[in-house]
Image (cartoon, rainbow, N blue to C red):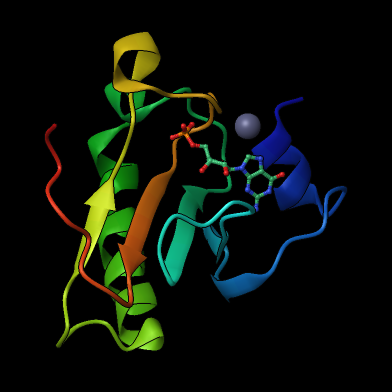
Length: 109
Ligand code: 5GP
Ligand code: ZN
């Protein structure tokens, strides 16, 4: 079972920001900005590349609620999902990084 599925099952502890029946948002263990939250569907999908559009529809609403709860809607935030090797994906369970609380900086080198 993957590491995020273990977090969903409660086998690995997490700092939960928001949760509902289908989605979970929790603090990244190794934050890159003041706010660095991971947002996942509870069901395992390898990446954005294979997730059904229907699941993404719920995910969109959930992410917007997480942004609301983190109070970053005014200041702005960055949303990233890494896909596969060249995307730099390390955990192969779909997740979005919500990064904020300070300027994110340029995305490209
Ligand atoms: P990726 O490179 O796959 O997009 O990002 C994986 C993210 O998961 C990394 O930012 C890493 O810090 C985070 N991470 C890995 N293992 C754990 C864990 O056990 N708990 C939490 N909260 N975050 C994790
Ligand atoms: Zn998983």
